Length: 443
Image 1 (cartoon, one colour):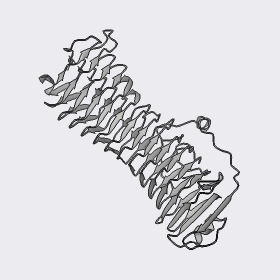
Image 2 (cartoon, helix red, strand yellow):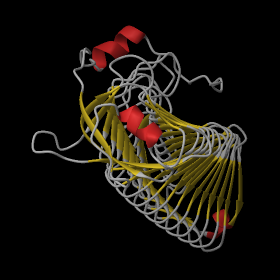
Image 3 (tube, rainbow, N blue to C red):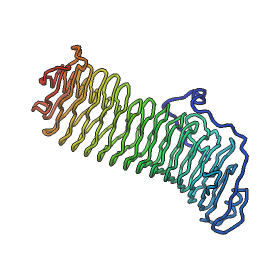
Image 4 (tube, rainbow, N blue to C red):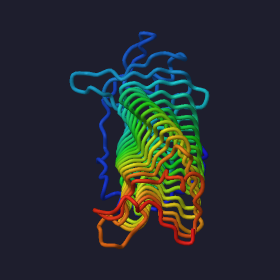
């Protein structure tokens, strides 16, 4: 099967990956029991033979550990039956080839299995699916692919339901070139060697699903469409662009979805668009610059969405604009962020900030200039009559090395209601005056 060529943002050293995730030894003994529950056939030890003999749509029940490379070429329902000694049946490739392949045009559901032991030179060591596949309470783990590949390769339609998870696979979690949905409490976690999910198709996260704790390249690398609904989350990932690297796609955060606790920032938006709706949030992320988001594309914040409690070691505690656009609408807020230099809430370098409606930039701190917003190198900022920049603080360490509690503008442009008092009650230093609202230098 042909694979799409793709390259990650970081190239990892295989020895490092191996040190982080030791794989179990192979040489597996098969103790497989499979039977056609629909037809009432006898129990056999050859799962592939039972699958091949079934009629389309039959239920195949499995117990124990079945070793091999399994192919489903017609509609089927695979159900793992628990026993007293083994609650979850295992499909195991024993270190050779892919575990499960689902052919194009086939509808398959897989319930209550562990899929493990796959080892391939390309994506799909655990699952390679071109059909319509639903995983229910199924774990894909301890499969191997080279770095920058993935244990699950989907070119069809795939749904992860219940407590399904893709975890601890070497070479990455999921490569999606089709349609992928994570529902219920489904998760993709701790897959070193690549992002948790690399998405070239349509990826939707619903309910309380999560992508978390990837140690090198971050949670999701998105090239197409990513939609987060419900209370879904991307959290606790570590990478150059943190939780989500949006290379050139469209990311939409709805409802109470959240991006949190990522190192390298919450979202790195390079050439795409990010839209935050409802009460979605970027919170508690950390980076060198752009703790909540590094943005060279377009970020639109609607409704009660928020960027809060993020930290940048250098600049742009909440958002760092590098030629990008930031639009705040409705009651969207950037609050409680901090930077080790300028732009506690926002740093705008050659970009554009537009504050509309009753949006706020408030309660942010910077060690140097621009507690709320630092504008430099031809950046611009427009504030509507009802939007506010308030209660921000520059020169947080009170050493006299910063100013512009509300807005610090150097070689940029301020427009709209900025001059009408909507930037107010901001501070300089710990005991600073509330008059330190706007500082203009060639602005």
